[in-house]
Image (cartoon, rainbow, N blue to C red; front, side):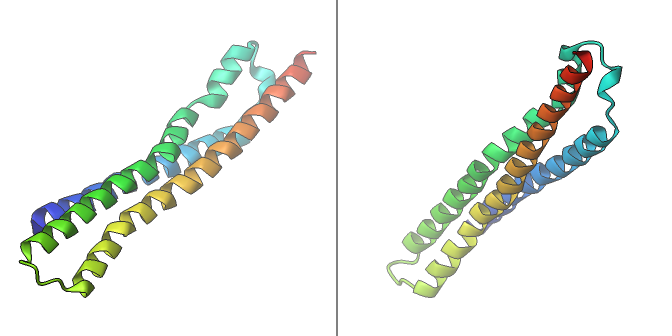
Length: 141
């Protein structure tokens, strides 16, 4: 059962780490893109919008799904704690239960640590997209 506990903990934390690396990478790419963009070079509004919104969907998906990955890890961790309680033969050590539950909840916290900044980054880039689109419309008019 110890192997399952490690797989649940490190599996969920590994997925969340991968998600956070993706968000940081795409956020940096978008930040450099928005710093260097010249809306005057675009002849089509659709082409501009495609370039501006590139990779924003992934950032949004990570922001909305990271809490669920954390919750999945927490549920797995709690299942392991309940299994350990059942296998203890009735001798309930509350300190082991509390420690097990606290360790399971760390995955939920990690999911929120990934989700909250991801959602904030997504919102900030949507604002930059709106501003760039309005600048393009002003140039065309």
